[in-house]
Amino acid sequence: MAAFPEISKIQFEGPGSKNPLAFRFYDENEIVEGKTMKEQLRFSVAYWHTLRGTGSDPFGPGTMIRPWEGAIDDVPNAINRVKVAFEFIEKLGAPFFCFHDRDVAPEGANLTETNKNLDEVVKAIKDEMNRTGIRLLWGTANLFSNPRYVHGAATSCNADSFAFAAAQVKKALEVTKELGGDGYVFWGGREGYMNLWNTDMKRELDHLGMFMRMAVDYAAEIGFTGQFYFEPKPKEPTKHQYDFDSAACINFLRAYDLADHVKMNIETNHATLAGHTVEHELEYAGHQGFLGSVDANTGDLLLGWDTDQFPTDVYLTTKIMLAFLNYGGIAPGGVNFDAKVRRESFEPVDLFYAHVGGMDTFAKGLKIAAQMRADGTLAKMVKDRYSSWDNGVGVEIESGSHDFHTLEKYMLEKGDVDPCTSGRQELFENVVNQYIL
Ligand code: XLS
Ligand code: NI
Ligand code: NI
Image (cartoon, helix red, strand yellow):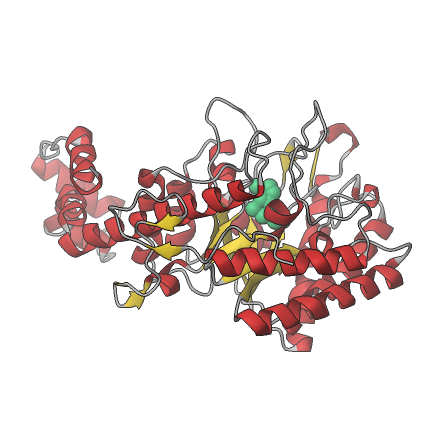
């Protein structure tokens, strides 16, 4: 029985459409910068929020109306949920999904039973993937919900927690490979600390490095060739997450000799929690050669936590897609909607409104970013701002033909710097508006 009987496949109707269950900008076959929008955006539905989100908050229980959920969370219920998930993703027209091991299948009494449950559900997922052609963008393991991870997983003070996490990631990698996943994500979970008095930071970080090394080695052993990602987040659930931001993650990867194996999965709401913008995080990862994928949500700047809202701001999506176009495209990563409908948006149809709006906002952002690049005005304005580096002493410094002695001589002769030109921030912002408005 269909879970969304009143909803048929979402169609592209063009910018004039007023139908909230149609795309106005996302035409998956339209070519932008030589690829279809489907290939440029690689949209993905997050299983955890969309299928498992209940709407609970610290002040009350879940509110979501989900008629397909059974009274108990057993394997048959999980398998039925897989069918609902694929009906949803197929009607939406997203080419990918992402999941944690524990989103898709319930835990059993011990690891053996848990793995068996997962295998049964994965079989159902595989059938649905074959039926629909929907693919796995990335898999991951939930190393934070179960109380065994109260002190963290790889960074726990309890060696058994590390060992259980290792067994769990081993299995998650096998499953991700079996489902043909394009990637595998490490998000910190509880890898961090609340109080330094009780924490051996060096030991915890060494363990995290070892853990990721074991994962990379095991992937090579089983022939999993997908891309590994590290997902920065500065706080929540712990006060000090070790994967604070792109710069901290990249430093960690270099320090532990993992830089060749792992790229960044940047999440908008995590960037703002770190006191950055998402474009800062993307640009930092991009020029360092670590740009991978994006968890496409947005926060609420009036709230200080990870609200995981669906993106509807075209400035935001333009900046994200501009970064990806500038650094050679998003593949093998994608735009994963790590976003949840509000507690007050409890009807099943809200899941469609949320994703359709997010996809359309990204499609529009992609088109605007491509226009900006084709036109080249902004890039030229930035280049002009640095024109002193394109001739004379600037070129000489960049080419390495100066040191402090020669530069002192140069300035003693010249006397003072050439006058600077204006930064023209307002002009730059107005030019951006010419594309957006
Ligand atoms: C939590 C993270 C998480 C990761 C996957 O804040 O965003 O959902 O994306 O473990
Ligand atoms: Ni995320
Ligand atoms: Ni998040």
